[in-house]
Length: 245
Image 1 (tube, rainbow, N blue to C red):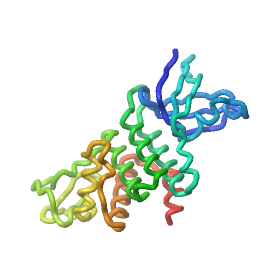
Image 2: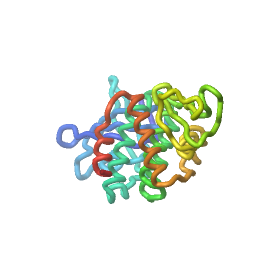
Image 3: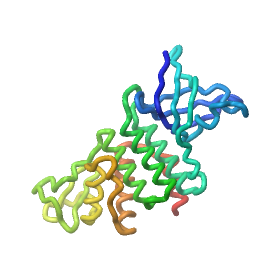
Image 4: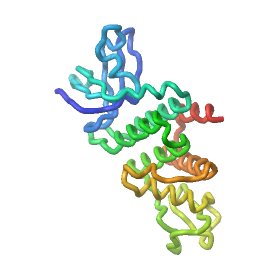
C-alpha cells in the first residue's frame, strides 16, 4: 500500500551502516515510523529530505506491517536551527513532545502546524525562547485533551483578580477570596497569557507580551503542568534547561 503525505522528521536513528529509521509527523496519518534504506550513502537522493527537522513531501510504502520511504522531496530544512545551541535544544524538545502526544493513524494537521510555526519562529528569532516553550507546551496539551479550566474561579465565577491560584492537579483556578490553600499563585497577566494560548486561533497564539519575569513564570508553570500530566521526564527538556542555567 502506498501513502503520499507531507510531514516533518521528529526523530532519526542510524540503522546498520547506511540505513536510517525515522519518525515522521505527517499531516494525514499522525506519526509514522519508517525505514529509509541507503539514506546514509553519499549518492542518496533522500539523505537531506529524511534528516531531523526536514519538512518534506513523503511517499511511503506499507508492506508486512512496516513502512519504508519510497521517495521524499524537501520543502523546508530549518538549517538556521544549527546556528544556535539553545534554539536547537528547544526544537529537539518540541520534537520529543510531538512523538509523545501526536497520535498515529489519524489526521494531525494541528500538531504539524504547531511544530512548523514554532520552528519558523525559532529560526527567525521573532519571539523569546521562554515564550515559544510555554506556547508549545500549553498548546500541545490542549490538542491532546488536557486543556485546563482557567476561564474563571471554580467557586464564585470571578474572571479576574490581581492574583489567582492555579491548581495543576485539578486544572482549575481560584480567586483570592476562594483560595483553599492549594495552588500556585499567578499574577493576572500570566493567567491571561495562558488563556490566550488555550483559546486563541492557531495564527494568534503567539500574539501576546509579558515581562521577562512574567515569561519565566509562564514557562515554569506550563512545564510543571506538562510534567504532571505526562508523569515522566524528557531528556531533551533536561538538556535545554541545563543550557539555560
